[in-house]
Image (cartoon, rainbow, N blue to C red; front, side, top):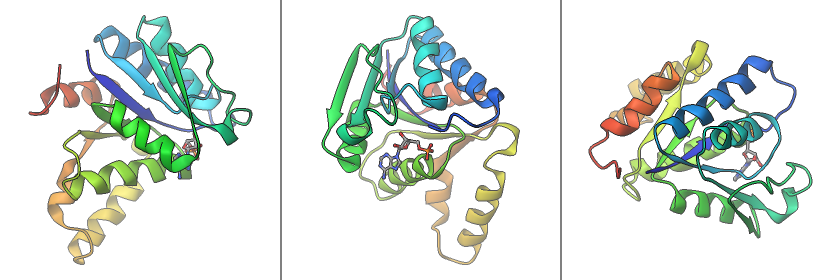
Length: 184
Ligand code: AMP
């Protein structure tokens, strides 16, 4: 069993298909025998991925800053819920606990988390896979801009290559299992 950290939207106002996608991800990672590391909230896609994982029988591990326990509705149904002092500690704990990172559609918090795990991978600070789920071209605009940055010399091409892009849940989970350092 590997621990997959899922980053995704906390918003409750996005199209229901995105919450459905999050639930599908939770169920799918459970079906493959993985556990979930999450932001420890019950709101939005974050809550949906936790409920999906538990419905599929996966252990869930939540990490939430004390200041967000009310706003993000702390996921007390988690098998383990760690309350951190701040956002920085939350990210550190999530990164330590996970064997890999799966980034779903989200807002600025999700983007912050994506860039944190990706930049630290590109700097050689960890060897955990970072997979971006680009369903319905959600991230295509960002990826095109990043390619322009690489062409202009701002982003090193090997860093760009480290980000694994998947266009479906199955392809995303397959991508983890094909990584040379994957721990299952
Ligand atoms: P969002 O994508 O904006 O809906 O945020 C998704 C999750 O990222 C939420 O749980 C936010 O609390 C979290 N988040 C936002 N900023 C940060 C940060 N700097 N460090 C860690 N988590 C964050």
